[in-house]
Image 1 (cartoon, rainbow, N blue to C red):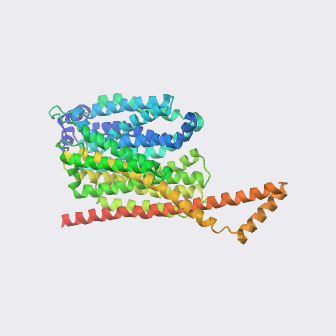
Image 2: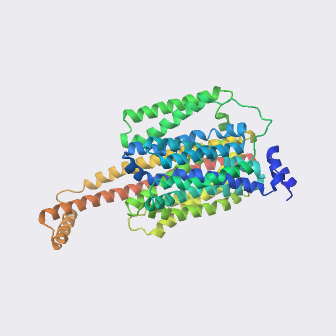
Image 3: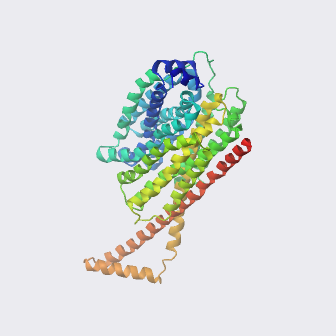
Length: 529
């Protein structure tokens, strides 16, 4: 296809058309590669640091109450920053937005690696989160500017590789760097990509169109959203540890909800809102937003439950558990472009429904996991779930953005990503809460059976004492050792049962995504008839 014919197939700006005439049709893929590199580097920092948090706690002598801010601050800042992308692109253009975001990310990474205290490191995580939040929605936005309609699904699948590789590579790379060198290298390794990305962005990414008017920035909306999101995340993160009825948690959640409601009220009244809530009047977009929320809840929840199961139940090291999760992530990255191409040809709801069933089935298989489940069996179960995500995410993103008019594409991209971030935060915290509560439930249940006349327990203690006697252990010590062994066994049994419950609940809840999928399918059928 000639350059002019390709340009005629696009609905894009004069600035981008000039870049196509300069670089040829291949320019679309060059620009997409730059955006994907930026997105991969920022998202990698989100997961790679988490595996080093125990070492960071030891280095600075802090507890979990302070360490959780390394994740919460990053997640909250990235969620808020996602709404800035549309305004920044209109004011600065994609070239400056990516370049400055990478500079902010570079600064945050250097500060994080050299931090002498946890307060400065938390600040560095905020900077990294801001950059990640601004960059992430750009991939969907750029696809609609650079590629014709009949190729957008395939390109969306390719661009999603960055999103999918980060969770796969982050824990493994972080574990290896932490075990081989020290925790500071989880920051230093993130310096390479932005140093490559900044000059490429300045050369290849489009500038702002000169004929667009300046738009006032919604500072009050940004403040209300920042307070609301931050306090909601803090309340959810601390609920299990402090107690959901504690004054601190209730205060955080109360102020967070109030600030979020005030943000919605202000957006409805403000003529130049940070978030145009009218976007949710588009029925299919609203449904795709709900699906994205549920999918991300399952994805983030699985990234919490699975490594924990592998370490607590199967006794793996952080590095080994990361290595087990990598094949599934790589499979997901391979499947996504193929499924994106299918989304250009078939009804996206069918692909999303199939992906939902696969992901739900993956959790259902894990209900049967225990300490004796083999490495390859668990890796295969994980792969099934990641194939499901590969089927669902590209068509979900493409169809969601296509559900709104062209002038709302930037907003739609940001909102879809925010819904995923919120879903991830809720999914992670709800999985954590359920695992803790079911552990207590099952421990109480198994302890209630340990009565003085329980013949099985007495027999187990007798056999253990006989074995300890054979190795010459004194009578007092062997009695205590046997009792401790029984206690540890009961706790282990309760933990395994709690994981089984959590996997089952995740499987059932994930099927809830089929309801909005069915509603969209029915709406499409009604519109076609």
